Length: 114
Image 1: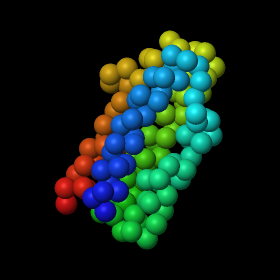
Image 2: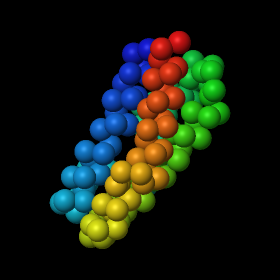
Image 3: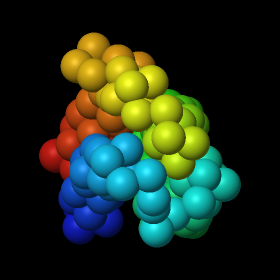
Image 4: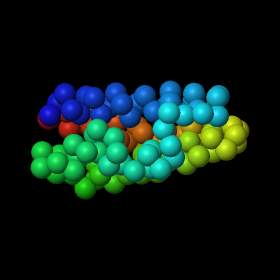
């Protein structure tokens, strides 16, 4: 389980890089719909599994994970529409995206330690 949690932390932290690239180029390997669905990523699929559902604070993690995907998909949508200023603003320090990412990563790290 710790390996799965560590991979999830790494993968969700990397989204900042994916989104910054999308803002800079106006392109992405991902569609907005793919990013919006929290069940598409490997961690989301694991969360849906019996092992994932057995996590302490499972519903909180599902909520944080879902909210993260919503925020990321909104930023990607703005980036692909060429609205770079708006997309960049949604990623600034203190933004919902940064706060949601930090909450998710911190919660996962907490679970990975136990």
